[in-house]
Length: 521
Ligand code: UTP
Ligand code: MN
Image (cartoon, rainbow, N blue to C red; front, side, top):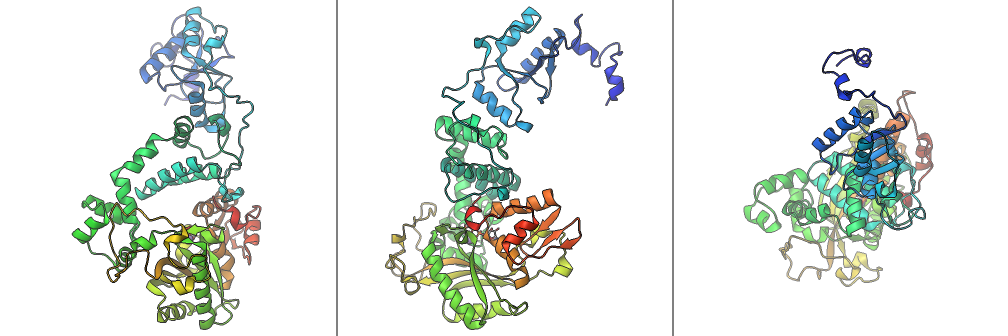
């Protein structure tokens, strides 16, 4: 690098920055005009040529877009396209003029910036944009109130699918970017009508904006459609639909030529106990769980909890606590008002449920969180350090009584899952066709927390996943604190901040309290 001081003095005989301007003209003859040529559709070499030409004529042509730019020049782009591109640039700065390359070439010919005529201006899409107000939302999802009322489901479904595809491909960074973009749209009070309304919104990167624009203009995003149709995505969906199978296992199987359940059964890789159970109950576990199912299971678990430890207390957490009407599983948090009394509760609870025939599968992990030992160093990884039981619950017709349609499961309005076009009868001990058996399998997660950590566990397990992630990001980036489902640590004061309610934790974090029903980010 040439030091700045030396660069300014263009005393170099040849080469260096002096030659860029060349000719007899002084550089920067028109200080109020700062040009930027958009490479999109213009091409890199034509852009370089035109930039060089402009500089020779004494125009200030910027290499990199910045706040200083007053005139953006482009070729074969509509105003909306250029605006979309501008949105992807930091700061959301919009220069005064968005012009066609014809203005530039005419100015080159005239040796000065010519008057801007209507024909030089980029065509904006019709529709009275002044009437369509731009949206504004705070940048962290935990600063926003996101109810289940989503006015932009077409857009958020598309972005969520791309997020899911990225996660299934173990590209977590991209996944989070799409999740954040979707979350911003979920928080908008109205459907998005035009790209210009998105100006200034946080978390909308170039990629997400391209998807949104595609959908607003063409009704669909080609990338989303082709992802949905891709063999790899379909195979990943089917295989990770098996409880116990994650993205990595599915990827390995796909590389071994296994794309669906039949091929999995035929080629028979060794399955662990969870995966065997997952495969056996595949259809049931891919049916959405209704709130009434969750309540019926809640009654059983409550009964179990109080009979093994009187005084213990159970709370419905996860999506159902946020008011969702369906879920992929049911999550419960259990504690006891006296610290320490919860120790040993989980094995007793599991035995009780097992002895009554409620568990089709269970795996319990012990509590491995020790504040004195773990410290606040890696709070994000403490997410599943509680004593926890992953189970498959057998929900019988009897337990479901009291719900509206106890006769059959399909009358709940639940859709049949896509199992890759196969109609496998995986419940081998069944004689009746699927959907007519008197019970269904449901994924149930049980978590036990000591009362001292209860508020943190409650907050951490209520979700949504993105809301949680944003809370931790806010804590770390804005407050220099570390938040986990166990504790909140203030790095500046080097001490733990205690809390007995979610409200207190929000207050510690300097955030307005957001009730569970508004955490659906
Ligand atoms: P879920 O995956 O059950 O999501 O996690 P959900 O919001 O209930 O949605 P459904 O079930 O798909 O309808 C619930 C919450 O528990 C936390 C997640 O962060 C989420 O907020 N969680 C989950 C953990 O903290 N650790 C885990 O290992 C799993
Ligand atoms: Mn859940």
